[in-house]
Image (spheres, rainbow, N blue to C red):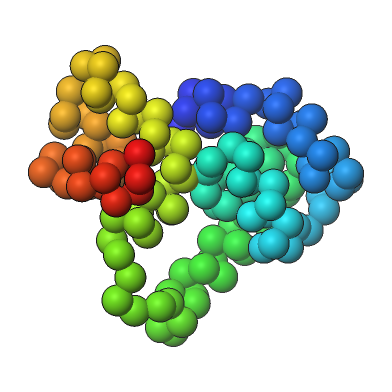
Length: 135
């Protein structure tokens, strides 16, 4: 995962990002700030927040609270129902990540089993995920 994070969100690029550079280490990011900062990298908010932790910009406790808060909301049923599995999966993984895995798979750099494992889907869902994620 650390390699994927460095490829998708190089440390220098994250730290040079205007939104990151404006905030001091330890800043408690709002959801909108995270969405805006993650967008140029094509990754999920959670992935971006985790990267901020590895770059010592956010304490691990803030990340854990974020994850816990998401889990509690999910358990309470505050999720939208009837969503599209593939679109949601691409959003959660981050479109940049899905795009990278799709490109590697299409160039035969990785096999179908590996591509499916990287995306946390079944082999027969690979093409549909790429199609629905508009890749």
